[in-house]
Image 1 (cartoon, helix red, strand yellow):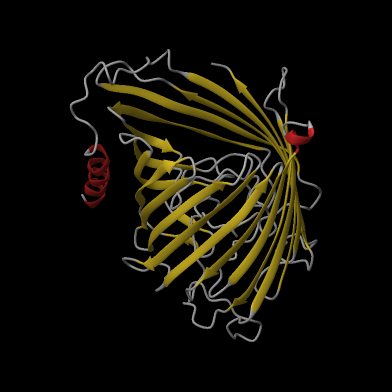
Image 2 (cartoon, rainbow, N blue to C red):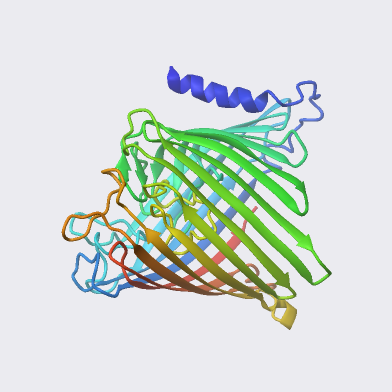
Length: 441
């Protein structure tokens, strides 16, 4: 009953602001078939990690490597005509192992690109199948089934071969111009390298947690082209309540020069049975930058004022912090970090579709002295880690084909280097990603 009440509460909060006097003509859908789309995305993904000190490798060689190909077929119907339109979404995904190197893949040093069998070897292939039914009432869309929420407190992850999925209900409302309200409740999740759903949730820093569900509600408001706000709240039942507030802004100085920036803030507090221990964290990041022609330069600062790691669902993108980058989140207890980022758009120089990015971040003062038993990290003598430091450098080049039969095909190279004291691994990482989208319908 409590689950039903929460779902109804989220639905009522969103649908309640809809203009109930709208006519059937105003809410007429474009048609179940006429509004349908069918897209296929091919993703070729190579990734390796070199554990410089040999950490985290079940094979003992300190190196993990995988090369795989993914095919994602997504169908979205339109809505039937009438005051209440109905439709369906469906997907079929296949991941195929191409190569993992001899003795270079295993659970200890795996990179979550492919599922691993009981012998620690990568599976040759795996698949994901799913779908959702949906309904449109006025300016509100409700989906039930396999869903892909996109909010700062619950956001599906798509940084591996196949995307992460959730099972539950989502509601999105766009009644007010510039305002998007979202709510939802999910009770299962599928990691990027998993075929099936798991009723248990997993977090990045505490591991598995026997939480029955996760729910969220909030909205994004775009005031104008230069200013936007976000406000969300969420709960991982019996684990945490998380609240988020954020804003982004830009200010043009001339046709070729503009300033930009933003703020992100999370408050995380233990909840219910406190499956992840007691904690009361607040973490924030702020960014300011300048864009001049093809160049963009930004400086960001981030700080965790809590005594425990700021946690979120594993392999999800549910962390809208400026210094959460390719590998490191810079979210350890009491950690403060700075990052400098530079972007270059080569369209200005006659090569549209080609871009470069590099960034360097460093964090200091991580201190686990007062961490709870779940998030505690200790040295070899059993003492809490203190005065921990780390840095990370990312370099990325990307090209998107602009025309012809291969239009929108993209090629991306990402290189990462990170070094840390006792609480993190020293890593060198390379990712090569080629994507080819096809619009069938």
